[in-house]
Length: 285
Image (cartoon, rainbow, N blue to C red):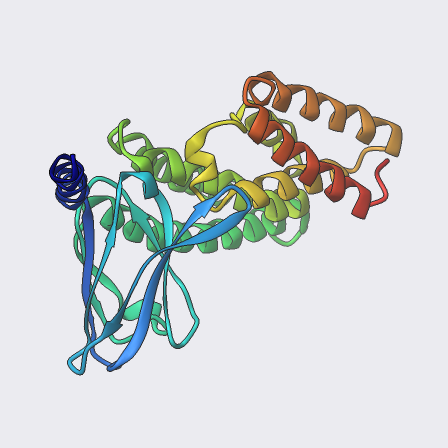
């Protein structure tokens, strides 16, 4: 009997070992300091594994299929690096986690796509902001308002930039975590800019929030659940409508969220409790 139990335990151990993925790397400005990997579970993070960076800056961490989603790499500097934990080993190099611009992923296609999009999307957003400013100037200021050819060029360039951004996302493999994560993060992070500079896009953005499945396990492993809720309702609150219309829009959003949440009691309680406290903090009773 004891031999059978021991054999079973060894089988389980080696099965977990064989199904594990690794994060290895070299941070040449760090040595003999702790490093840890954390994952997301709804509104909280949890520890996955930890190790010590050796005297040459090398480290190795482990994660499993249960951790698939987004994670944080955290060293003694306490400045986390966001990584995608998917079905692949990850290798990175850099100076330290404090200098994110030095971090490069040598292995892990999903993290390379994530890194590429983060860099390119930031530049596109800066360019769009500049073109939006110029478009207003060339439309509203009499000094420039007759320059129709330039206005057309500005509009075409804005369309080109947006199309390029969308094409990158559409070309990602549909079964990859990054292909789900990046469009959701784009929606969540866009609300402030939309409310201030592109109010005409508020209805479409609210529709995207309402189409989001708040019971999706990918959302619970993304680190975006809290931001998705807060930014969703912040956008409604700041959509420029009178308070009675704001209440109606919030009710529409709550109804849309419940379609999938009602099927999962644990997530239903988690989300509705947080939402209740969120609305209470904003005196939206």
